[in-house]
Image (cartoon, rainbow, N blue to C red; front, side, top):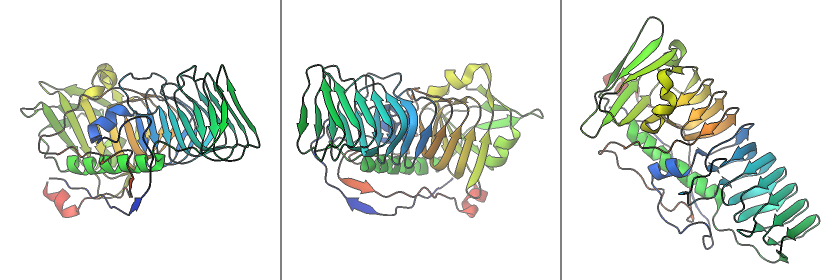
Length: 373
């Protein structure tokens, strides 16, 4: 059995106001992976797009978010704990930025938009279905088309409302704290990753001399196949292709381990379009990765809570990581993965509630446990 460790580094109380996007309800780990297409505890730098919603704990620079909006989402299209820089576009409904907007933020499909302050540009095409609220000062430009613009501080720039809206100078209350929401979600997924890492494997793989890996599933009665990949860094350095013999498997878990925090260069060809066709079944749990560099299309959702990720190949599924430097698309593939029945799926307490859970993604296994598995 594999065991990983998640270190908690603090708990702080924060006050939040009445929620505008959703009631304060518990959202469990699998719901997080389906409500969001990207979750990070740290910064995101992007030159590409994300199909679904994004929850970013740090700063965001660039990128296009919720470009293929999902109708069942109850969370904003973009939530950022820190500042927003560069040019950012969103579709879908709703934005909540915990810091300053110094770049340009274009909200194409409206919804309610909350930002802390604006020294750059915010353009909200609300079209009668939302408004723009600035908690503090405006020294740049804020414009709402078909809705109101409200600011709580001082306006030394431009505050505009077109298409029948009005401009108000009055106190602004945010629906929830974005940094707290991100930290809470990351903590929940970190617990989930730890629990999955302790699941006994029941399936195996072979590697041909040419570097082709054949994963052969022997699922349990619930349809879950579990593969353990030891010495993961060396594994991904040496393999070139993935093929799958799944039999009756309906969910596939890959636990990837190393002796210490490791750097992964992943350039693998998922044969027979399996990166897309099997994406909703696969969950990759990178227990000890310090960095991931993905250079080709990768199939399945990824848990890598203590990991800095760089992409030059598309990801088919949700990514949960420490930080992201994005140079390829992340596609929404709603997960049909069903966790092991022995693994409780932790709820994110209250995702938009006042508890901010500290997180440190340093998770290593005991070498003796690894050797004994």
